[in-house]
Image (cartoon, rainbow over the protein chains, first blue to last red):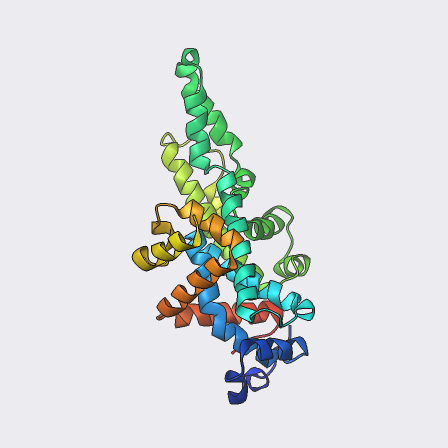
Length: 218
Length: 72
């Protein structure tokens, strides 16, 4: 990906004073610097909207980025009937709520293990330890991936299990190599957290997948 | 939750929905009401100071993802 000189891209002083709607119309007509002014102007509130719904800074950044990308992609269909911020904030909130509800629809891994233990019939209490061991083994690295946000899971799956390089992943996900590296980094951090959580629930050390694989980078 | 309660929560508890006792209801209202979203955004806009580094990094990532080039 080629880098253009930054002075091609920097917003001019005149753009800084334009209202949002005029900037978005200009960006729709191909003025990328106008879009930059909009992003600079609204990135903070968009990120904080997502953060206040999700309560997770990494996820909030993902949602904020997705919201701006969605706005950019929808720019040709936008008509200035409503305020730009009303539209942008609605996109952001919808994406954050989708993620929030998706996250709530699946139990945390440690909750699943606890539920399994609590659901065991009394006659099998002595076998709970073995049942937990089986459950832990079943929670393979692939299993843990299921708990991650979609974008991180896709990137990690393609990188670790399909052996695709960053450039190919970026192409497949219709994003940039930089964004893919960010997804891989955050995904690995989240996986480490999941592994630590599950290890803390399995003090006998029978956890079923090698965390070293994550630590090793591939 | 209706808009008047949402407004009251904002003024008394602040914009961090995680601290609201009826967080779920607030999220449901946000899903349905542009006015609630506007109220929350306005409150966050007032509070949004000290995030310049984060916002700059986010803006760079957004611009890279949309325009496909560096943003500095």
